[in-house]
Image 1 (cartoon, rainbow, N blue to C red):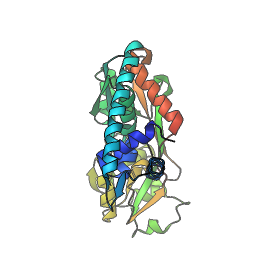
Image 2: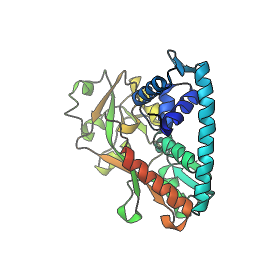
Image 3: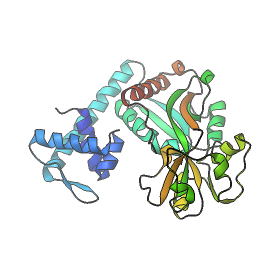
Image 4: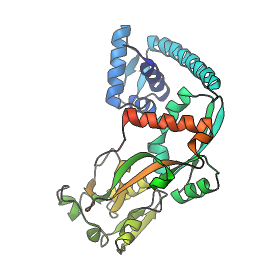
Length: 301
């Protein structure tokens, strides 16, 4: 059976040139996307893509199909814009602030599907530290912000949760320990440490301070989680990172859970009541519906 997701998927794969990036753009796993395209090709009775080692290329038939799919989706967006206008939503602009890891890993699919459903509403993204996001919310520079560990009185819409984990070179003695045992912060603060913040004031360093501990040998300080992972891989030290930012390729890396378990959560907070603006209310409902249909996205270590 063919549906809108199939058509959005083949356009996304055609645009990105890879199955994985196309799948991510429409909020699917790579295996689910491959199955969906195989099903569509079977229904159509012809191949849409030629699969190469690192990319996919449209066949001549696929090019014609994608051209029609684009036209269909453009018409659908026009119909949605008419419906939004009739419901009083029409066009508008929302300003959304977030710290880097959430902006790059959690929001792209939500924003892509929102633009497809409500093309008249523009989303303006601002990237900053979590403290900058809080400041922007306070002075209403932004309409929505992604906040770490928001309190219930702020009526947040929780996007996800993940645990803090220790990232250790595979040559390290702690890497030989069973993951079920985990590691304690008291064991880590004596090790060469790669301090990464991810643009947030809550990080491995602050977790240790909350326990009255201090890292004694900070070798490097970086902001980006990926940089910390790369330095650990090079045996420069250990790092503490959220499990959702762990790289797919973990060669040379060992992941150990912290004991006791420490989690962080992150959610949307509005600068003004959600019902105060049609655009804001529409986006909030979109995120709520996406959470209900897909559940939280957290990569397990």
